[in-house]
Image (cartoon, rainbow, N blue to C red):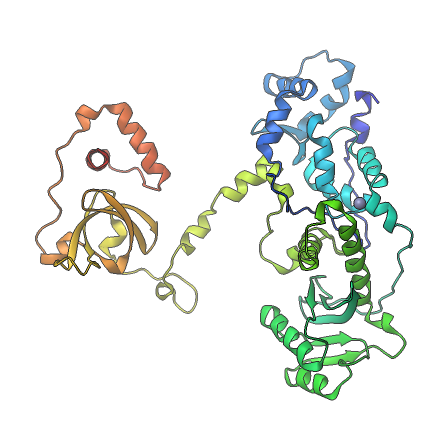
Length: 478
Ligand SMILES: [Zn+2]
């Protein structure tokens, strides 16, 4: 197929299937090999002549007359960009040909179906013909083929949608490989927990698992289970009702009333069976396969409203392996948001009850600059002195400072272990600092030190003071 088909396979319209698909697909890496990241993509993009030509057009401008191979790409040029030497199309990384089969393995790591793989691909990767490649890949997977004989059972659920996370949870047991598991699913977010009932399924064991669950997510309003033991026992119901939880048992012989849990039981078993058949996971214990399933399910299975369970429960998006390949997401994740700096505070006492930071009344420790003289509390019983001379290097967070003591030994100290020099007797302002060497050091070296200091979070300010600090640090380095 020629490149003329490029545009037709550019998914300008993207539709998300409405059903909660039973497959999940994100990959976690249990092998000893490093996962593909955007540096690998960039490296292989450099040797892909077709992608290189497109990048040249983006960098130097598109020609007025263009080869027919690039005509459709030309039409999509607004959606193309270069980031960290990777070619990006609508926030999807274009995968060079050499890495495409590896990428298919990543997309299919948990034996996702075609729909789910395409869904994930739409969020993360693109290449020409990716949809056909995905279809072929799934068709050729032995584990999927051997499990594909049973059409998936349709289970109707007549529950009204929940309005908050963990307001109504459904529970059910399931048996797998001679073990019993308790499945707990939140009807709002589809957040699933699978508990291995190693000590049996008596009422006390189930309550123990549920208590741990409530500790994580709070008490639900309603707990739905089937009508079997121990869910129908007096003790079980009494315990939950004392926590203000209404217990609803599905009618006898109608387990489908507990549809949420029933449906997910099928999903869990389906994925676990495929993972057990996958030679790549032969070395994994069942408990690890369950974790693998949970990671994938929570972070990559879309609910009816188009969100992943993790998005509906957590205030952040967990990082997954496939996020390594997108340089844009990578750089975002490494940037500490400005607002977080406020929280880089390891002392809670500076926070008032209303959550607003209160000033710590102009503590001179807050305005230290690199090179400032300090007293550091002596913890060495063999030393007579209670305080040792030290110098401030940089601030690790509000209350932890990096300092140098003695002949340049670097250590960290809590602010409670530090006194500034004029604290001691109210007179002396600083240690006798070494001679200024700035003129001998030369500007280039100063700039290098500057950059190094900046990378440690030291701010630029008054140049004269700064030079003094730099000369001090350089003498320290000698
Ligand atoms: Zn498969």
